[in-house]
Amino acid sequence: MRQIVRLLIPFFILLGGACIAQRYPTTHYTSQGGLSQSQVTGLSQDSRGYLWVGTKYGFSKFNGETFERYAPDYKYITNQVNHFVEDSKGYLYIYSEVGRLSRFDGKNFTRLRTGRKRFSGLCIDHQDQLFCINDQYILHTVEADSVVAVNWLWLKNKKIHHLFYDKVSRSLIAQIDSVGLARINPSRYELVAPIFEAKNQSSEEKHFEWLYAANGRPVIEERSLGQSTYYVQFGGEGWQPFLRTKDKRCEVLRTVSFDWIFNFQSKTYLLEAHTSNFTVLFSVPPNDTRNILYTPQGAWLGTEKGLVYAALNGFRYFPENEVPYAW
Image: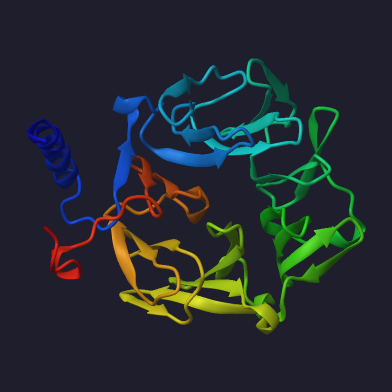
């Protein structure tokens, strides 16, 4: 019995030392731990469970224990890697700065012809069709290893500022000037909901991000004039706001059935499921709300100071006032 106690004492000391003033444990990965570079600019998880981390100097593949680094070669990959998307065959499309788009099969790269254009909003639909938008806000796709503008008649003279693909509804979603947030296809567009109509606001005043909660439910973030509002669908009520942040004020409008991580006052906060409680996860904000990935155990976040894993559904550390009779 004494031997068991001796073995447990170091464990509790280590556990307590790692968790001071922290409700949810986090693990921080930087270049010293194997990351290509500490400024995370892109984040994705493939169908095999591997985590792909884009940085300002190449990218890394993480298997849960170790990182495999891919340094820029300036033929297939340049310095800053921003986007990863995977098709049904498991091929990974990787976009890096200066308009470099490559397909990776796990061993070899194939470079796609881009005409030296810059792109954003990289996404792949259920038919393995890749879409993106260039810096002139024109929708593009890939044909025979070349990135070309789409020829959809209704898109003439319309600009797209943000592009997403929703796997749940199998629809391509875009923010269109003078229209708003809409589902689009070659023949037409349709507003996601009246609440996301443009209403004479330019794309510089308001823009949307299509995100996902831990349970796979879509969440829409609306950014406007220093304010962020988050929406989710509530049954027959349609899209409704559940969280709003502006300046120094954070307001929970409705409780939701999932944990939600957000940026507020240059820190990373967690809104706990089924409550109006939100707490600081750590003092560094994520680079972008798109650089947050939820898993059944927790969440991965890309920041300017490395990759952070927060164990939301694993071990949790309770402050003493919540466990008054702890031994």
